Length: 171
Image (cartoon, rainbow, N blue to C red; front, side, top):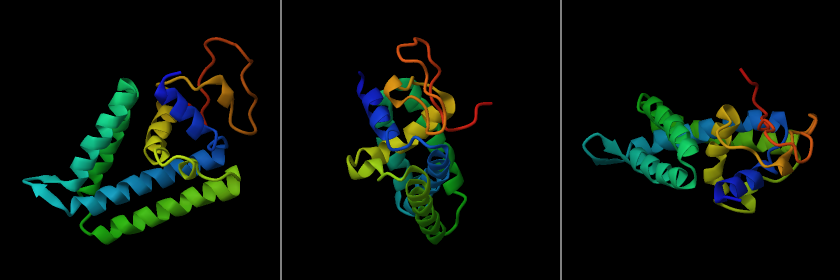
């Protein structure tokens, strides 16, 4: 099993319900956006800020794990960074960050009833955005051990070509 598959499987074991995945979709987006807004105020040189430095570092990490998923996750983060540039005050970023964590807590307390994956492994703080991108675009297959979110039938064991599990609606 490739490292990205192991990370997605482990992270996914704490993110199986649709409610939790929906809370994480909003929560992680707000957290990343909030961090980028706050880091945007730290100038490095010219138009470059600490937010772009962070994006380069995490994009390299995602690309090392899986190129298609890394490109998609980097594109999502760059989109959030462009939006963060339009926010004039770091306090708005701090508010987005706090509200994002509240959504994370709601997802685990109300829907999942399981502790967050990052409490077992801090790397999962970086896996969350990639997990959501994978849930949306199905770039990596999800191991059968994850089967389906709670409340949905699991795919047949050993069936090849099973569609990836997703808590997000398909278009």
